[in-house]
Length: 229
Image (cartoon, rainbow, N blue to C red; front, side, top):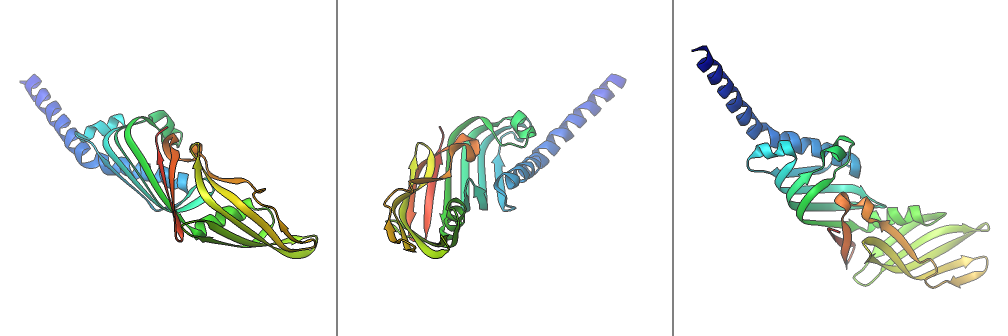
């Protein structure tokens, strides 16, 4: 009789545990991931959606689907207006997670899209162009126009760059086509593409070791897509 009672209590305990796991695990895991990603991307605007059947698979770090949305986040040199990440049959690396990193040991159909605007690019280029003030950026379908003020030998000069956004070997660049300096002590200098490429986002700065695969430059913004290595 005592054994039957003990087995009944044990069975009820496991049933309660399973029910609580089914109800509570998704929001708990989602909240933990949102906290980690908020730190990684320097923004409170992170939403995570997980699905798993049964939901207890989440205890093993396994999901059927993963969706992450980030707004106003910092990725590499860029502050992106919005970023969306999705994947299927993902398995989280608990070792990396305990160290404050988001890593997957397994995933299918990983994809990422991110959009940044003129202000996000302006902030990035202002940090990259030495001694530049009043940086302004205008993005069109064909190119990116950047203007700025600088001080050359005590003279206020104007910088003008024309370029475009490109993806090469998984990295996102601002590629300079034309670089001019006006009103310098030596007059106007046309330096062509001597400024070269400015790296904006490298693969190691993307989540889950993804790589930039395509760029769609539009009026006022740029849409970037990344995929698995």
